[in-house]
Amino acid sequence: MGVNNRKNSTMIIGGVAVIFAVIVSFQWFLQDDAYLIEMKESRQKRDEMFRNPADSPLPDSLRGDFPGLTYFEVDKKFRVDARWEPNPQFQRYTMPRTSGEPEVYVIAGWARFKIDGVEYKLTCFNPNDKDSKTLFIPFRDATSGKGTYGGGRYIDTRTANNRVPLDFNLAYNPYCVYNYDYACPIPPEENTLAVAIEAGEKEFSWE
Image (cartoon, rainbow, N blue to C red; front, side):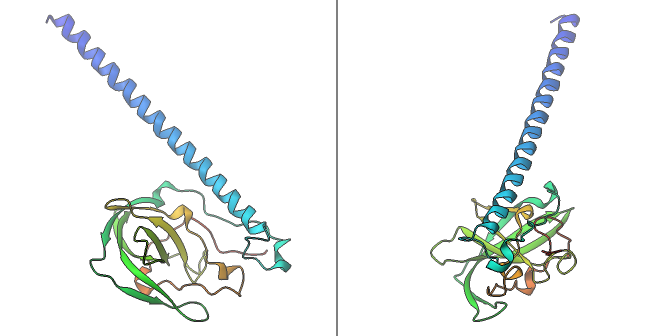
C-alpha cells in the first residue's frame, strides 16, 4: 500500500470513528430525552391517581384542594445500577410501622452502589415470600426531615441477574404522609444513607 493510500485509509477510519461517536452520542441524547418524557408522564399519572377517589390515599375532605406532588429535578446521577448480593439464607424481618402492628418481610439481600465515587449499601426486602425478585427498599438519607419526609421514602424495583436497577428519581413518600389512617413501614436504621438523595418526591405541603 502506498503512502497516499495509507493516508486515505487512515482518514476513512478516522471519519468512521467520528461518525460512530456522533451516532452513539445522539442515541444517548434520545435515550435521555425519552427518559425525561417517561418521568414527566409518570409524575402526571401519579397526580391523577391522587385525584381519583377510587385510588387516592387522600381523605375526601382534602382531595379537591390537592395541588399536586412536588419533586426534585430529574437527575441521572441518582439512577444507578447496583450490584446485587442475595441473602444466602431465608430470613424474616419484622418491620415496625408508624402505627398498629408491625409487618413481616423477607430480607432478600443487599444492593451495593456508588454515588459520586462513594459506595453505599441498602437492605432490600421481599414483600411476598413467594416472589424473590420484587424488592421493597425503605430508606432515609441526608434530606430526610430537611426537604423530604423525615420518616423516609421508598423504592420498588426488581432484581435482574446480579444487578438491581435503583432509580431514586422514582423514590416516593409513604401514604401516611397524606393520610393518618395509613400505617407505614419505618425504614431500618441500616438503611440510612449519609448522602443527600436529592431525587424523587419532596416533603408534601398543602401551602
